[in-house]
Structure formats: structure tokens, C-alpha cells
Length: 223
Image (cartoon, rainbow, N blue to C red; front, side, top):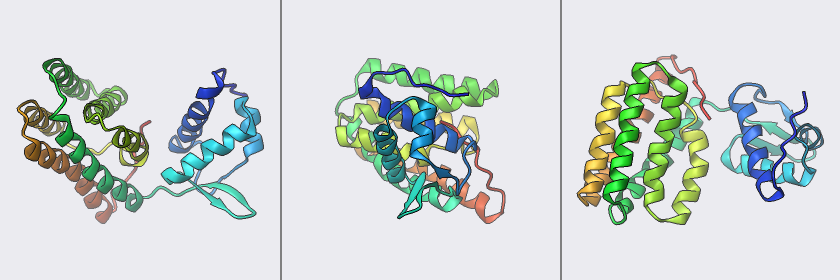
């Protein structure tokens, strides 16, 4: 069935990129599949130029690869690629937590604590989809509080790989780490906030690395 994206032109590229990304991460489009600009444009009800721009963004994210004279193909997303993204995320989220110390208010902290509590509640209900959504919201809000537009833009891109899977960690431990990060930000301890944020991301990466070494890595995609 054709899925037409009835959106304003200025938003079309974003929606096309999100839809192609969804198809890749859901497994609807497999590694090595060729992505035809013409077919996608017809399927999504947009101009080929919009599809071309969206594919260029996805190429920069590492989800697709352009091969001269042959076209654009879905990239293979393996554990090594995802761990590289987590290394980037570790550095940038540490910086975000440091910068957030200068801008956070009581209402911000309260809202973030509520999200952290909700993440834990959802994990106890085995609601993985909402848990993943809330976890992304928690981390992106800290990045937004950095008030650094370049950092925010980078976060919107690296999360595609760095947050595209659920790292199977103990929910209670994750909750405690979230609260410690917030405490450091609230009390304006930038060194501690950065250290804790980096440590939090590093633990997820290390778990992925252990799973890979033991042959247990099975990507559980979210978007």
C-alpha cells in the first residue's frame, strides 16, 4: 500500500528520512537492499529531490551507503558500528551534562526526575516501547538544557545508531544512575555531572561489547 506523506514541503525531508529509517531499523529493508529514489518518491508521495536529500542524511548517519553508478544501498549495522556510536555518545552526553549545570532550573530537574521514575515504572510493566521512548526523552532533554545548538543537532543524529538498540541493563541500576546525574546537574557540579553521564553511557557500551564477545548480541531496535 502506498504511504503518502501529506506534510508541508519544509517538513517533508524530515518525514521521509524518518520513514526510510524506520523501514531499515524494523528490518523491512535488509542490508544490501537497493533504495530506488524513484520508487521511494512514488511510494511516499514526494519529489525525488526530497528523497535524495533524505538519503544523503541517512548516509551521513551510516544507515545507507552510496555506490557510484550502482545506487544507494542499506548498510549493515553490526555491533562494532553501534559501539563506535556509543563512544561518540559518551563524549557528547558528558559535555551536555556539564553544560546543563549552567542552565537547569528546579522545574527542569523535577520534570527529569519524573521521567526517570516513569522509565523505571515502565520497565516493571515490561512496556519496552514506552520505556525506550522515555529514555530517549530523558537524555535529549539534558542535551537541550546544554543550550548548545550544535550539540543538540549532533545528538539528533548520533542517537540513530547510539540509541537504536536497547541495552539490556538492570532497570534499577539505570534509574539510580539517572538520579545521580540529575543530582550533580542540580547542585552545579559540572565535573561530576560529566563523569557520571559518560560512565552511564560507557556501561551500556561495555555490555554490548560483552554480549558480542560471547556471541549473544541480538539487536533490539527502537526508533
